[in-house]
Length: 369
Image (tube, rainbow, N blue to C red; front, side):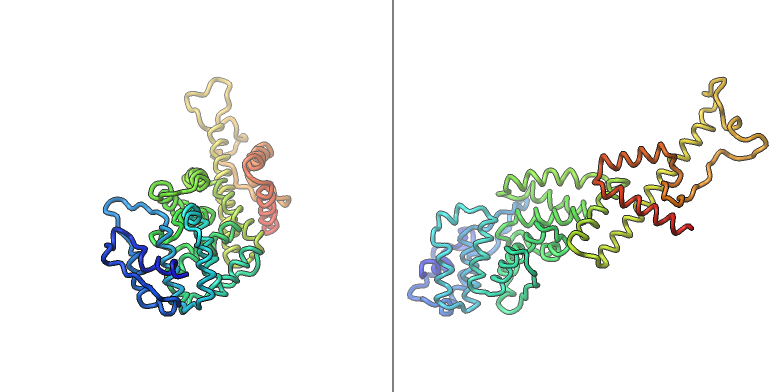
């Protein structure tokens, strides 16, 4: 056990400490006794180093992770038996060094769980999809290193299970410079922002992940490239309706019907209103172009606007706006145009989108009775 505790005092960043500045702690068996010199040495060993050029985010070294873990154990006044269990997890240094950053985060959480029952309860909830009570970050849990790693772990679970709002609450304030796994921080935050219809902010995280982060897992990079393309798609028309309805469906699948869901539903209705209005305007313009356009290009025998009007009428060729019928027909669209629009939606979006639009139009028709 003593060998691991010595890491906190002797393991240091070569850019911040010299050999003469290293403090050796001998003959100390208790984390409580280590509190003074251990905390001081650990603080020195993990001092952040500012890059002179463009920022490049890298995973925290194993020595730094161990030093910060020991610092927290000392602050928590962990007993010797508990500390022995923690050190056993890190005993095979070669194996630990070979772990990807995500697995190091898991190992760190297991270490916290041995010393803190609340972390153990959180990990059990994540493994069983149980109730996730909010973590109380008071007392020794207010330590920034402890809090940020626990929040990243919890946010990862939330994101993987589509609880994007809850994940963003945890991810929003995390600092990649002090994260055990900055690649996961950027990746999961980008996923949440993209699914919460914030493509510009998601694009910022994706740029940092792809251009400014080292040790990015291949699967993260592949998915991030796809998300980058999606974040650049214009959020108008059917694509915007699709995104809004997908978010509503996700929330309903998770058993939510609160204010955010109702707000999204209102946004869907507004987007559908605009979509139908644009389709009607386009239909009107096509009718006007066919009736009154062409000017001198009209060939003999073609019907112009004047020929298309009823004798004695003074109409200007503009069609009247048609209300939705009682059966929920799509406004100004004739049967052929309505069929084409429905076919387009069937091809590009899930079946529930067309059903939702049909329910919407029937609802509006009933309101007009």
